[in-house]
Length: 632
Ligand code: ARG
Image 1 (cartoon, rainbow, N blue to C red):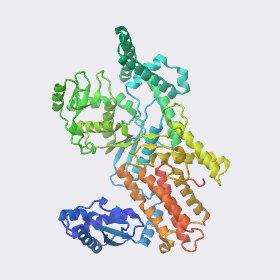
Image 2 (image 1 turned 120 degrees about the horizontal axis):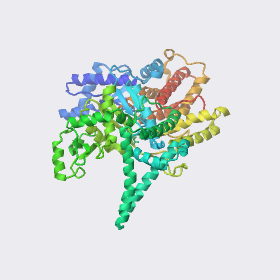
Image 3 (image 1 turned 90 degrees about the vertical axis):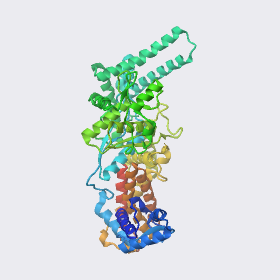
Image 4 (image 1 turned 90 degrees about the horizontal axis):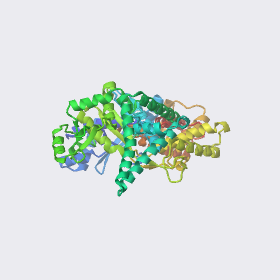
């Protein structure tokens, strides 16, 4: 109800501003939602009077009064009782009874679709989600990505968009040449069969370590010439051989492709088991290799050269130059005013002598050895998403470590002429675990497997300890759902830009800012409903019977669609997570302050309210991928 009320207020305010004689456009953000319990502010408030007063050189108080009068004359939307002016703000006060009637009616009528939206012209959104590199285990960073992107895509779908989830695997690049080299040299088939990812990771680390050691020795200096040559030869053997293997892969050499496919399939098989456990799904698994193998890299390289967007360096590499001022609007990639001309770059290059020294950033699409890079495949992905999907948006859930890279990619994309597609890097902060909270097998990286196992173990303890109604054979199943709630809420509970420390012992708790806390509130609602003899029809109850605590809860239920608006605007699921936590608090205080089943007045009304609350919990938790529990 609140979201249509807000829309009604925005429209009405627009008319009122005009009728009051001011020439100013009214945006949805000109009406803000306030807390329910602030008498003075009302539930909605507008500060537009200040901006108008500043423009017109008038007093904000007077402006506010003039607009409020005009709005009152024009008519307030359903459910809004009055408009007042306080400290220059225009405040709208809801009629609590009308709000209750409208909100409960809406939730009852819409059920599982309460909060959803239908759009006449939805955006086609193709999203990079999860996107781990093959031949390595999934770690906590991937966990945050996978869960955040699943929740966010659920929200975007719920808001009526057409979303394609693409698990853009990192399955191409020089590192796989190195890995092929290392495998052919030192690989062990039995070890690979036994645990492919562990074996490949070991080989990969071994390669990196040796290369690092050789580099250290080379840097140490004061070596005999002979020794230096030997070191250089040894390094060249490995890295050049790695490069050669990647070249073979890019050329489609059968041996290289066979081995690589084995790595890829084994990795996907392991990833899938974890994704299934998390309950997440993808529409596509194209991966970087797709763009290399299906010729899309060549398409963009040719296009870039033909359109004079990219140039060839003295070493035969191909790159798109990016000038400092190209970044000016990079915060808003849709408006980046980029300069695609190469003349400036040519001059800068001539002055500097080398690409590295030149006064621009080079966005490489071909390296000097002829191989493609990460950026080539990302441009190819945009080309493909436009051509095959007619995408309105190409969005990337990727850690903030890659912020700079995505700024460059988006500038390069604009230069390529991809200007009608909205590009968005949905970045998120680092995640770490408190020291000593888990003993990790590998030492430095914490895998998703380890986190899930630990959560499951902790959840089982909780069910054993607290679960009153739980039969022994159900403990595991319930613990699994609590464990998932723990991990999922933990991953989206903080705004996505923030670095987080995931403390599993806190996150699994039934108290505090946790998923299980919200789950528990829902279970409480279910048990009330269970004990009642059916829930009365909304139209049969009397909203005037509600008290302030009841109204507070109703008001929060009404806010739910507005919270989804905010998630959509921010490309984040955290507002939803926070909201559900607050709803759990409000519901718990409703439960503690009121009688429900044996109330002398409003018993029927509170059953309807409890039923509506359970519905909103289900809808919201469902979007976060968290299951509710009848018992816990
Ligand atoms: N595989 C990359 C990584 O693990 C992330 C890929 C993100 N998507 C992209 N289109 N660049 O760092």
